[in-house]
Image (cartoon, rainbow, N blue to C red; front, side, top):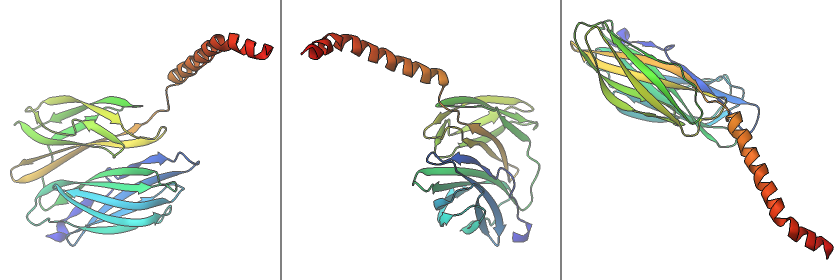
Length: 263
């Protein structure tokens, strides 16, 4: 029944800070969810100090995708809510809700933010699967390790999705994993930075889901990945190369310059 539905609105609800390049301001989006009468109510709030523009939300639930405009402008600390239809009849267990919020800053630069949350429907049981992602920092590329542990006496085969903001891409993005009875499985996840802003942090989620005994289970691991500024060594080498090029050009053109001056 609807009144038995519970959403963990605070689970994985923080979305990374995005530093704006044009001024000393930032937009930080937080997403909360609540199930009401068969509708998923998504609340988007800007806790930064600069307004966000053209806010759109895309919600994925059981491979169904819903899109809606949240607001043309989202000032700081003024949350806006929108409802999305969910087909939840006959479901049992814990399910993931993936929300991607697309927005722009005042200079029309595009950004995105991601939230992954759990919805509990009807009768549930304790999941026998645990997962953790190793912390990592990145510039253009990073590798992290996903560790999955089972305390079930039977083998678990789960669907794995690596959920990233649009500024990044993960490999694999989706696959199937098998965890042995009372055992552990590890895998590498490669993250490529497409357009992440230096000094900002972005959430990376590993979403594991499986069925057992007619009940759906969902386990989520999350890390915040900081994007580092340009490597000072690489920057230093760049300017050294420029200086060498200038010196070579000066040497090659020095005789011609002397002739020109004599004239």
